[in-house]
Length: 286
Image (cartoon, rainbow, N blue to C red; front, side, top):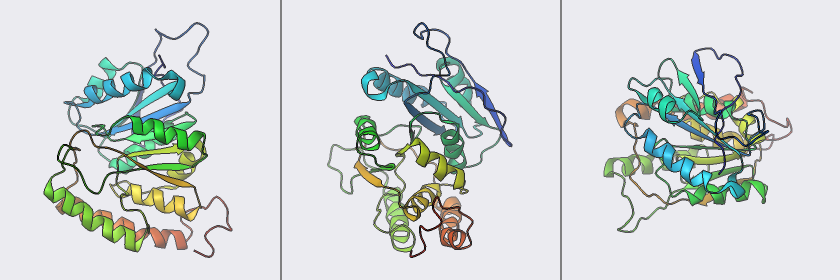
């Protein structure tokens, strides 16, 4: 079984309260928690008390049964200021996980960034807290990142779903279609599913992208992909299958305006050198 191990304490972060749990039992003799994991999985969550345990159990069981694929694995759960017992559930039921807690709700982008920058694995994933995807997608992404040397893998949900597949609500499908059209025309051309909640990265790519990102709301995915394209990262789209209906806290009334504003700000930040490119020669002709 692959062990789920926590990070070492790496100092305080302004505006965050981190709680770390160490897995003392179950580690092989001579194996310490300072051995770098092969795989890190970041799970951002907000008011997920009712379902976070089943999600993490599913992840643990799948990854733990495939040590030859995932190797030593760390699980990082980021509680983005939940008002329910999400953190307590994670602390009690998953003592081997690293729990990062925000004192107040900062947004999904901020939660994912905190987890990704805390990760120490050679390959780093983030996945939505409800884990609505068929889990073999993790293995396919890891293969592209490891053996085929892609920098970033993004999940792509099917445009059409058969009758047996989970069906998102009509309002969400409509909102997603409008958002996708705007983004694909204005910012990230050629990517039709920027918002899929499963993405994987090589560690160096993850550290760069998330250290540069500044979008805290749901538009952070677009910012990450925008930076990846501007830095000529090799990106692979990987088809994923939905097994359950995705939970979503996105509200058209509350979130559409701020998301669009952040997306329109991306080219401005780029051209005013708010983002530091890995190679200053990159992007000059873009």
